[in-house]
Amino acid sequence: MKFLARLLSLAGKSIVPPGSAALPPSIAGNAPALGELALRSSRGLVQARPVWWVALVISLWLASIGNLALWKAVAGISGQGNTQPWGLGLALGLAIAFACWAILNLLSWGRASKPVMVLLCWVTAFAAYFMLNYGIAIDASMLVNVLQTDVREARDLLHWSLFVTVGAIAIPPTWWLLRQSLQRNTSWRPLLRQLALMLLAVVAMVLVVLAGFRPISSTMRNHTQLRYMMNPLSTLYAAGSLGVQQFHRRDTTLYPIGQDAKLGASYIGQSQYPIYVLVVGETGRAGNFGLYGYNRATTPQLSARNDLIVAKDAWSCGTSTAVSLPCMFSHLGQDGQNSSKSYENLLDVLQRAGLAVLWVDNQSGCKGVCARVHSAATLPASNQPSAPEKADAGKAIGLNPQEQAALCKDGECVDMALLDDLDNRIDALPVEQRARGVVLVLHQMGSHGPAYFKRSLSQDKKFAPECTNVALQSCDRESLVNAYDNSIVATDRMLGGLIGWLEQKGQRQPTAMMYVADHGESLGENNIYLHGLPYSVAPDVQKHVPWITWLSPLMQQRMGVNTACLQQSLGSSRISHDNYFHSVLGLTDVQTSLHNAKLDIFAGCANPGSSQARPGVAGMAAHTGAPA
Image (cartoon, rainbow, N blue to C red; front, side, top):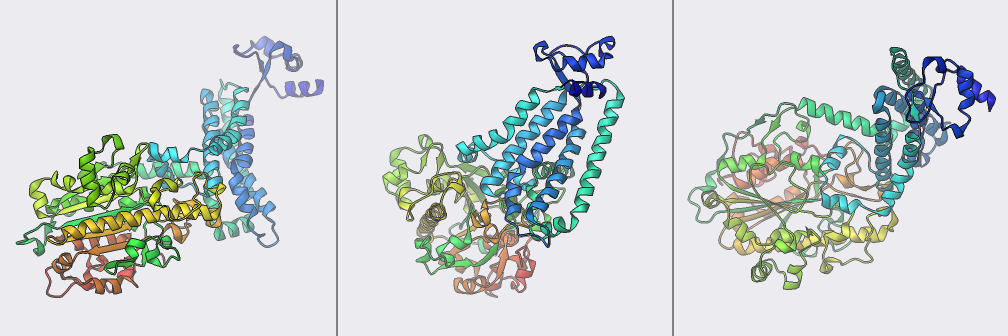
């Protein structure tokens, strides 16, 4: 022990009592004596450690314990050539540790040192939990999802395993950090030393990567998702990327689009205004819709119809609502979502043309899409209409009083609540615009996870047993799929009720419904759950979405299209969210130079003599953002 104390004294370590000022130079110069004092805990003296040394310890913790999800993924990868997974893990671990050390040396200065390290420990712990339990990856779009999460969504993620995992990863280093006394750099030499060590860490990281370049590059090329699992580097990179995006979008001007928009010839002399309902689905996985050939009867009402137009090969432009929703309503398409400018969207164009537009939300908001149109939201049961009014509304959409009363509880509603009181909502729109036509946008809660079991009422729960745990990995595969499939049954009933309501109105006025999901979902395939993976590495189940359209006979006559033609055309054509903007313009007969007929799914079936006849959709798939 005396040898250790003398070694510390020779290294020039200073000793200070807790809470006291630095020792005077006359005492500080007596290094051997201070080394002896460091061993006497009864004196209450603690060693003041250099920031770089503490940063190194924290970096090793983050690279090892903070990356349990990465090591689990690496362990599942077979050896690359003669390199075993443990060798690959060691190389990655050292590279991550040196990278973290460099970052902490760069960011840890003065009194900010401990808060920076503690914050990074907790950020790492939360990211590790979601990677371990849901197989998610961290990129800029995932951070946007986190920032836009509302109380309802956050509540669904709360589980005891969250607190245990985060605590186990973050509390030990936090406790250790708070017990350390850091040296205060009062001269420029320690600062230069810290910067030099940062550069040393960068050089060491590069050397480690070069030494293991062949197995690392091969693994990252074949298993791209691992790039987004290096914790906390992926989170820091995503935050930086998001910051750069916001900087490039510092132009706060909202640029108008479709200023030439006007209503087409179909509106001339109309006796009854048309109603267009756009249903924005949430987390709709096409492969689990019975209508798409699924081996379970998840869509009994829709499957019983022969007048639906089902696009079997439709793809999203994102894997999260925050990305897909603005993309769907944008004229720029998937490739233009990184534009440095902010533009109006489809709803602005429809409203500018003279239509009454209403957004009804049962989700965490419209991501800015409905900012300039009329909007409403489903409400808790205590704020719903009185019993007689609810009974009338329930009758219109096929609900009995008990079902009507169950629509909303615990501060959230199932999607059937979107259909509640639609007539009164329409009547409240401006009379002049309503007389031309009404566009209703219904934003579902859909099959949003992880609490799939909350998305369906008792009468929708056709498949049992049902997973009722938000820690999805703790559920067996069958119960997890049952819970998700029951949410699809609920969507089927909601869409069936909506079409029934539109059919009643369609006897005297043109009506239409178009349902498109914003993205799909992973249900444990390859240990991946939920959605939001970077588009380039996301599995198809997160990108293949249902797209279902229904047109009343009067609407078909008005548009000059034939359902049978559309069924045949869209049964084989590859389309994507890039088609959405232009297809809605075609559906509503809004004329503007923005309209691209090649991306309008209705254009190819328009009768040459109709008021909405447009060029065909030959080559439509080549213009979409769907994966090949």
